[in-house]
Structure formats: C-alpha cells, structure tokens
Length: 217
Ligand SMILES: [Zn+2]
Image (tube, rainbow, N blue to C red):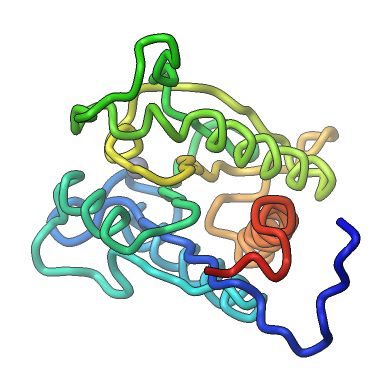
C-alpha cells in the first residue's frame, strides 16, 4: 500500500451481525444464579455491540430484548443475509467447559474445478465463506489467547451458521478456571467484558486486513 488516506476519511461501512441465541419461550441452558442462557447471550451481545459501535462498526442484531416468540434459525439467517453483514457472530453460553469455544461451520468450500455455481443450497449457503470464516475464527482465537482466556477452535455443522452468506463464527462462552483452580462463573460481569473486549479487538484487526482504507464502494 503506497497510498496514504487523508485524515478524517470515514472508515468504510463494516456491518457486524450479532445473534444472541435462544430467546422468548426458548430459554437455552440453565446457568448459575438462576440465569437463563437466553438472558446471558443478550447481555453479552449488548456489551459487544457497545464496544463495536464505538469502534465504528455498524451493528445489526436479531434481537435487543427478549422476544415473545422464538426466532427460527431460518429467520436469524435471513436477517443476517439481508443485512449484507461483513461478519456474523452467533452467541451461546454454557456452564461447563473452560474459556471460549469458537466454532466454524464444517461445510467445505465449493470446488473451483466444478465451475461457477448458479444456485447455492440453503443448507450450504456458508460454504463459499468458509476460508474467510476460518480466518475470522483464527483472529478471534489469537486475541482471546493474548487476553489469557482459554480458547478452543472447532468446526461443526450448526444452524444458523451453515445458512449464513457472510464470514461467520459461533462463540460459546464458558466459565473460566485459572491454573490454580479458581473458578470464575460465566455470569461474572468483568469476565464477560474481558471476552467482549478481546473479540472487539479481533474484529478491529480483522477489518483492517479485509477492507483497505479508501476502498469503500
Ligand atoms: Zn445455546
């Protein structure tokens, strides 16, 4: 890059889609302190949204409250895909495990030798984004490691992940067990904020590599 962007130039619009999983009649997992996963995913999404919005990202969410009716995974994917999201994060929480689990779809990218595909099956919509999704997962994993939060990267067939047309990962937050055995519950506000900060830092770094400054359409 030899071009120098003029000062004050706005960053290209980067849309981040957040899907706090569960909600309404679907409570998700039962967590310590009588907390439900649907409420924790919403609280965590609210933290993440505030950090990302202050870093200049445009935010789209499936929900910013507890809905009266559950969203289907198809509805969640439609909101993400219609919003032309640049990155999609599906958020879960659990009371087992240690640290953060970052999941990428197990679909395989389309084989270029097969020629251009005219139609992509709904259940394989994510396949074309797999290389970018893996790079996003890797960036988030590195940032969590730097924050000394244990992280597991894995791949799985998961909805709505498989139906998303953007680089996408599912993030499941778990309690934290320190090397000397001290356990921080997943409901701990400081712990959640540290995870959110690490994810926001990862997205900021990811954005700088995805979209060269000045390349806005
Ligand atoms: Zn869940």
